Amino acid sequence: MAEPLEIVTAIDAALSDGPLKGKRIVVTSGPTHEPIDPVRYIANRSSGAQGTAIARALATLGAEVIFVTGPADVPPPERVTVVKVETAQQMLEAVQGALPADAAVFAAAVADWRVASASNSKIKKTKGGLPVLEFAENPDILATVSQMEQGRPGLVVGFAAETDDVVENATAKRARKGCDWIVANDVSHETGIMGGAENDITLISDAGAEDWPRMSKSDVATRLAERITQALA
Ligand code: C5P
Figure 1 (cartoon, rainbow, N blue to C red):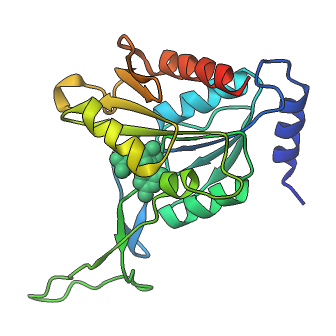
Figure 2: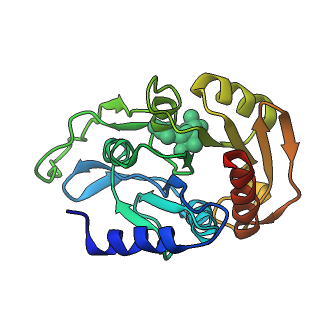
């Protein structure tokens, strides 16, 4: 049986009157944590702020949002079904478990690699010895869902955080992964975007590259949610 909160959220979404009423949207957000041993892990600096704002904006427009989140700095929004995960593998399974959906937005900063053989017990510090970690590639959740032959969401949106040649790299990424849109941003240090409150977006789609003016992450979320609403109408 579904969790009580999930039932309440689903009822809430069903009763809402927004333009996304009746639409089910999966959103990933936050970093992933890839264990080294039971007390140590590899992580990244994603705060989860942009993904959280997108989930909130979609829920505000009436969507039923399944919010699959890694360990983020910001709390999850209200009125969404929250699925908490730690690793990329868990995130993939949670996303697959949340399908079918009308749309999926992949805003999570998924670790590209995991430690191939994470230890079940704490790795001890030994005199003169250093641990050697071997890595294995994580599944690419965006590419996996974009390339589903059956049951692919009608609209799949990915992100591209770039430091150079933003449009070229993001356009190539869109083709490589097979998603419909890429929300590209320049995360060079001097932009202050990583960890900041604002974002500077170029939306890459079939129609080409569309520059958005610099705006708050919450305004980016509202604008993206409006575009998703138009696309799903
Ligand atoms: O390849 P890169 O990490 O730059 O791609 C970023 C996009 O791909 C984001 O939308 C991110 O959520 C998604 N991604 C994913 N699974 C991965 C790596 C990235 O879903 N393993």
